[in-house]
Length: 69
Image 1 (cartoon, helix red, strand yellow):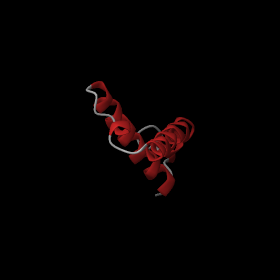
Image 2 (cartoon, one colour; image 1 turned 120 degrees about the vertical axis):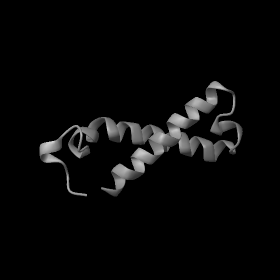
Image 3 (cartoon, helix red, strand yellow; image 1 turned 90 degrees about the horizontal axis):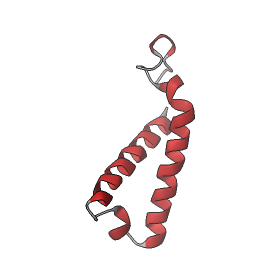
Image 4 (cartoon, helix red, strand yellow; image 1 turned 30 degrees about the vertical axis):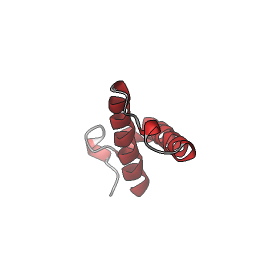
């Protein structure tokens, strides 16, 4: 699933951003406001998508019925 891959990548970006925020270098400090807000929204939507779809798409969480990639 391409959407699963995109959501996963966005979640990695979001996680790294939180790490950078801890040191005062978050994405919001480097990218203009509307672009940063769009990225934040996409990361949040990715988290919601993964919350509800991860179990059926993950080979580790559902090894017997993993989705075809």
